[in-house]
Length: 344
Image (cartoon, rainbow, N blue to C red; front, side, top):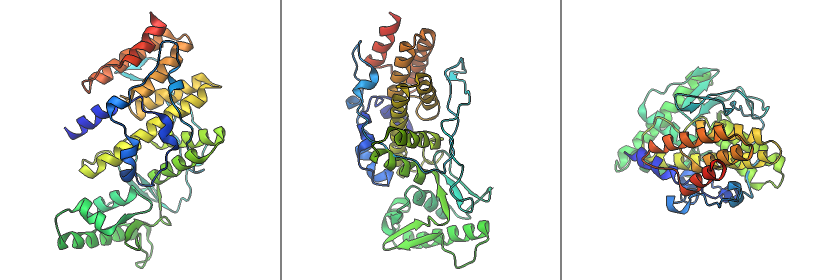
């Protein structure tokens, strides 16, 4: 029920301003979600029959990418199968795969995966798994008391003991997986914070955040587009997908909002010189990032209409209607307006 309410909120915020991409980013999605997510009534896309849906957006800032992240191929607008657009590979960018193959690869954009030399790392205790997931959401780490309050609230001294047990479990599991010496600390303490050591971990979310910051600070469109491609490529699914902990909801929503805005802004920039490539980005985004985002669907339909691809526009509107029905919603007035502009 909690996740259904979350999806309903997100479906109607599709028109949120891309100006968020220029906002300051805290480095921790849990602390930035309030400013990142607008209430549904404030975020409907607003256009008129003669306006381009992207002209109402103000994406003045976004960031440049880490040079080492893998990208997934986006989707191309081809015939549907089972209610989805069929995937056709098209690389978003040529980017080397890894920053440092010696590091443990951690993916949390999607289900949590921890790989050391290509082999999955498993933790012996639930405390270790839970703390690792929490620390992976911020390269700055978390205050010791915040970890306890988040994972083991109202447990008093027992919560502190569970924290120490979790730290021992993570360190032991990582030493076993990497073969490093017993004195190596994978969870380190800096002041009052505990964090995963960046010397040993390559976390997809950290690279996503870094790309966001770079894209938000550059004035160069080429650099911005490179960063946005990285963000869209890294987003392989909801943050910490599969975990139903209450604390995951806010960072998960913030991550999706940033990925939606990155895809929308990238498509706007691509559209200037290559509208087909913009369609590829948007089709990828409504399949992999947020299947219910009207912001993405409106941009997709607008470009399809401008290119005269009316059958594709009709299919897109039909599919948007089906997907919104999954969360008891209907296409907004702006989405219907785009449809009617080209097909009436």
